[in-house]
Image (cartoon, rainbow over all chains, first blue to last red; front, top):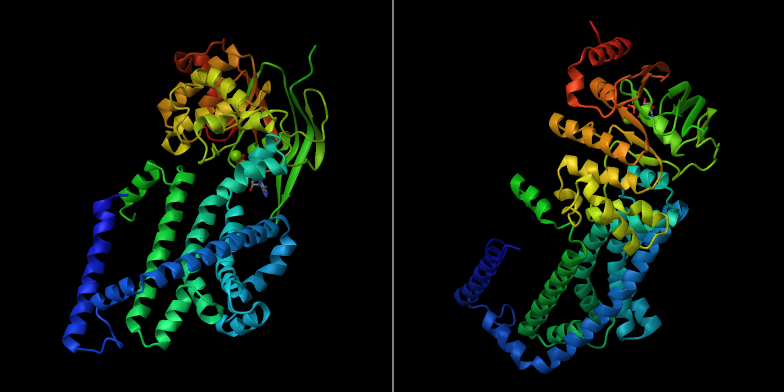
Length: 262
Length: 254
Ligand SMILES: Nc1ncnc2c1ncn2[C@@H]1O[C@H](COP(=O)(O)OP(=O)(O)O)[C@@H](O)[C@H]1O
Ligand SMILES: [Mg+2]
């Protein structure tokens, strides 16, 4: 990554936005419970840091469990859809429908089934994250060049060998795109889950702060959620670049650069 | 006497397209003997690639039969070396790991396969390139890698589908000479598709000419030039005569 080019612009923009925020609160003199200043927010974060650290731990745990299950479900569904076209046809509409389910509508049901706690949260993370994984992986598995498959067949490869040598590696870039989307949703999904059906975590922290009209703390929770999402996104991106060196090869980047659209 | 490497007996093949049926090959019969270098030439769409796809068992003929090494096999996959028109290297594998694919298919452990490939890599002018990704290679190098991959299938018969079709004239001439050298050195049998008349004559012991769709064999031309070939031969009258004969047959001559 080119730090000067890729890092400075967003940092500058963020600093500008924070300064504007500061400026607006000062000029308008809004009450802190309507719009706290950046300093209020930092102060609130430090004041409640014990609570916050606990909450972050809980939320990250739910996110990790949820993402693991989402990965298993997503990859499982993608594999099934790939092996049996009938499964694909039968399942696809249902998968799409699952994404239109309103979390707020199913939350009470989840609470009735599992009680307040970590289970509804995990369920909501899985529901929000398995879909991009399943779709991107299923698409990736069909992205291999048919002529390539024919070549391997002509060389005497079995179906299993073709899967391992061609179809699986060809699916990886697409899978990672899905993973990046899923991981970005995951933390927010966890906090929403905690808000509607949890007993602890960042979502609960946010809900309690809201009920206490501690707007500065709501901002703290939002900020931390965002930072966690970005960190996880970067983590996946880093893993991707290690796992797919050929995809991020210097030549490829150069070609994009030459076209001026990288 | 050993049996022919490849024998086509009255082979016909028709494809069912989206709108209409396409007769690709009609009553094609020919024989390739061990050690021969045979080129196939014909206009685009005359069924040249289809011939190869039938040979390697990607399709079955509608009529007629195909014999490999004198045997009529139901499953012909993996019996002859096959290099398709496009190089089809896997972008996520290094050159070395690309060329060992046929060995892996045969169940040879990667380490052993790599060792074997490394020994022969210099013959293919790929030394020092083994760890590159295909995207870093020039067109000529990619063709060499695809050829080595075909080679490592370990079959005595090689089917090469326009291997040099997309290369610039200089690289192409260089690779032609090189191919003739390895063909002689390792005594293989080669069936080589081209749409270049001079290339067809320069490489071959025999040229098979296909008619426009549906492909039928119009002519088999024996090339009586001595081996090893040299680029200087292309200016000799004998060479020019053969080229003119082919051009006339293909309907391009004045
Ligand atoms: N798999 C296929 N399905 C349908 N039509 C095909 C297929 N393969 C080849 N054809 C048709 O058969 C004809 C001969 O094709 P091909 O063997 O590729 O010709 P050539 O290699 O001589 O250019 C073409 O008209 C082509 O469209
Ligand atoms: Mg062709």
